[in-house]
Amino acid sequence: MTTTTATPIRIMLVDDHKTMLWGLEKLIEGAGAALRLVGTAHNNDSALREASRLRPDLIVLDLDLEGRSSLEVLPQLLQDSGARVLILSGNRDQSLLAQAVKLGARGVLSKEAPADQVIKAIERVHAGEMHLDASLMGALLAQPAPVKADPEAARIATLTPKERKIVAIVVESNGAANKELAAKLFIAEPTLRNNLTSIYQKLGVANRLELYVYATRHGLQ
Image (cartoon, rainbow, N blue to C red):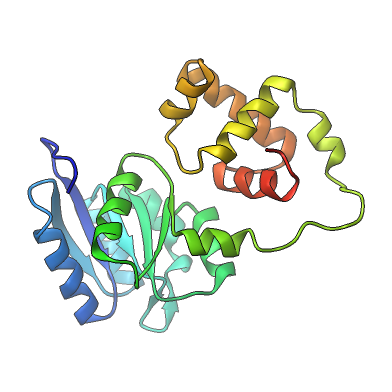
């Protein structure tokens, strides 16, 4: 752990592999007082039940649970628990990983990631930041931009110079918290949020990940 907080991050683990659960439990126990395991679950039903009962700060969630996808219950899981979700999965299906983020997951990490990266991802997601495995982000952005005229040109043209600058900072500072972005832009956080809302509406995106993908594909850097 790089930081210590007075109140530990309360974590719930959801995985159908006992060995994986055991390893994650030991990882959390070894991280010191800043992390605390409050419960585990092994399928969609138990995940919903325990998350609603325990209301953890953060849920580490596998995508594949006893033959079912946890994406089926992710929106309800987020709503019932009020927790942030970090996907920790061996599934490399990029469409599923992208869908997980669009449904509300704040981070995606491979089960092959080293222990220190798992801890870092937990800390960042709990802090409200986005954490995406570099290789997974690369795959999410792998689709080439079309060679023909960009049909999104009209949308992009509606952005003000200030909004274009904000988009560029978002791309440059991928995953950074709003507070950090606002400081770089010398504006208040509420002002940044208002500007982001305007940008989302103009470009037809829902969140900062979609904005990052859109901006990268269309050269808004």
